[in-house]
Length: 497
Image (cartoon, rainbow, N blue to C red; front, side, top):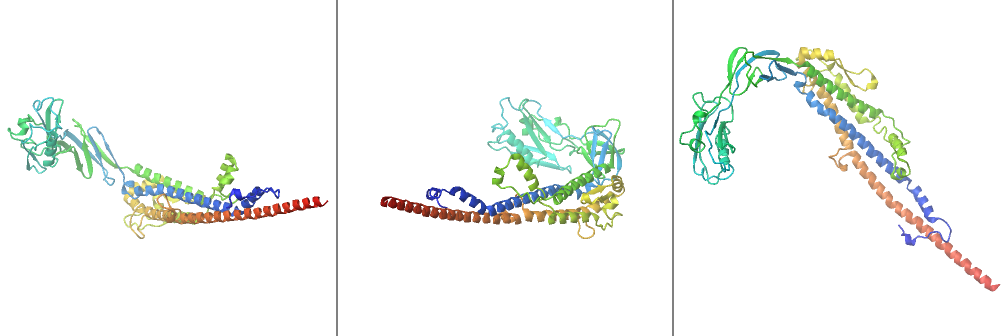
């Protein structure tokens, strides 16, 4: 481009050359304005694609639950005395009632110093000369009631808490200890509740051991180490822990029941299954509505995206109204989305080869697509029919919805998810996502190409503008020379007269 110092400003011709060049360049730049609008349109369409994928991703996240049997075979567990006995059951548990009475809770064995084992200034985290070189010996019992012996020597520099760590390590976590600085007492205990040694204490040690001499422990003072005692439907039973599993139902003992046993009931929770299916249907319909709205939205071709120059010339209200129309219909009649909607809609109608039950399609369990074409394939649910199907054959409903096999036995949910995933993948290939660079998706490469064309066009505009200034400069010089010659001739004629 010619510098400002070299430009002639129209003194000789009397013309507004600067304004003339600007007007000429504005006309020359018209194709660039169209390029900017095309680039902005492509960016807006890419963002609309990504918004659609975000909506579909929200639905895709719900497919995991819909593939689980628990969504169709939920169980509810109630107890007449949950403060004493509570329970949990798997989704496929049989409906039943259990009478459970708890006479005694399981507890773990614990022993504590008779008096202060260390003075008030003792620090359990610091190396202790009192403990150095002493041998720690004790025994505990494993699940089979077999005695396990532990022996190690306290090393130089070890603290009391280091000794406790080694007690836990050497006993494979079966025995632990801690020091209460307020009372100065040492506590040694089993980490699991229950009785492992029927004939005596759970933690055994000699009278001349560090437990007795240094820690002031008396083996006869051990308390706890009791099994839970309970009755199941009147039969006396016991457990080392306060949990017990019977027929797939896990009972938790929280307190004793006294004279009246707790009655625990396990029932199929059809309401929970219906709620989960309805929640999925609601989300599915929401996504279908969004996609249909976008593909049917009116496109206003007379309202292209605004360039920055156009925005600068408009008020905020004018910009808002213009952009409302320019951003409408970005995905109108989009082939990728329309094909995806069609595939999902047809998936709901397909028959499922369900050899394990009487149901052959979701229609049999009360789910259909709307007969109103304006709904674009939204689902409708006959809740009463769905509830009855779940009550009569929850396993059959599960197989109709989710049977993760290939072929005619593939569940409807699996087929719909296949169609959804394929649509999302095609959109990602077209419009990318936050994890992809522009080179990695189609529209990104188009945007790169547009930017390159716009940069090349800008360089050509600089050359055109330079050419215009060069032409006007030469014109100015010619006029100036003509004016100078005219003045000289007038001067000569004046002298002759």
